[in-house]
Image (cartoon, rainbow, N blue to C red; front, side, top):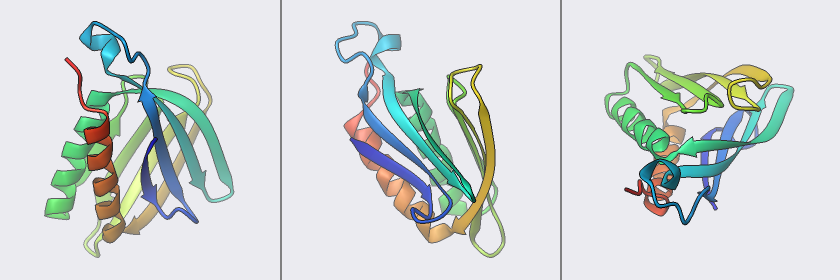
Length: 143
């Protein structure tokens, strides 16, 4: 299992644990690239866990967006999953703080929603990028 964390593990954070390919023996590219993940959100007094499905391309897009954001330390980055179970908007302020606005949905398309915000120092984003690099190496695009 690979882990991807945004924020402070002991306070506000979003944690994505990738358990593996959903269809490990799939023959077609579409099915071959689904991942079974667990999401944990901790924001203030609220916290929750739920299962979700991501595509490998969701994570590759996130890696590209965050690499650009971290390199420039200005602007914004977005993360959207195909099943719309997790959305994250990242913005950098002039002090190097990363501000994240998020939405977590416990069921694809129809589930309950939690909206949240958190902030953390840019140095934590480097840790997230390293985790994301390991994750995309462990679960590459298949096709």
